[in-house]
Length: 234
Figure 1 (cartoon, rainbow, N blue to C red):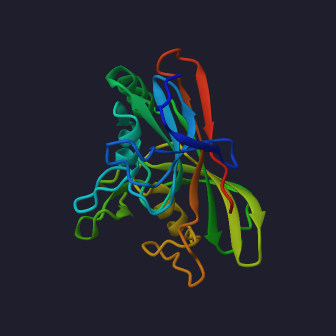
Figure 2 (figure 1 turned 60 degrees about the vertical axis):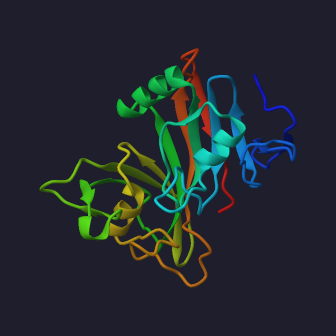
Figure 3 (figure 1 turned 90 degrees about the horizontal axis):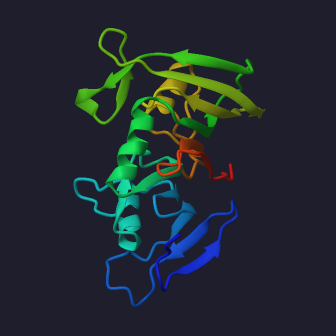
């Protein structure tokens, strides 16, 4: 395993490594730390914080990709989480690893698990939402349900805990459409707390209560199963 020399590291609550560039490093690393869940010569798994872009925006260069590449120049983005969502993201180290991992996502060979807290008390213990999505072009990047032209989107949900006015869920997306989980929970009347786009706005919510807790992939070099986990505090 090749680690960045001169790095500052400490263990995080979920077992990851918090890493920042050393003061002597000449690369524009930003001073924000990376929460590293797994690191080897072929891939990096990171715990993305809520409120940070996955890749550069039109006017915002700061993102997880830029922070990772400041420490590991060969890091390449395989997939994305939307800005408001936190949790596990994997990056490839080099083009060969990138192609291997991207193929897994394209063929739906990966397994993703999210934790969400939604408005309202859900009475059923589990269910499936099957509703195709397309871009809401006048309001992009928002997505809407469209049975005529939408792309298939399938989400399984399972209740973890109930409170008087909210429910904590495990969400398992089978497809990986943009904003899929946010739209799907909204259309069944249980918007994710902290979601201003889909009816989940809450005065006391500090963030969107959606976290990518676990991602299962095959290692791009050994092809062995690899489970990457970042526990959430909510």
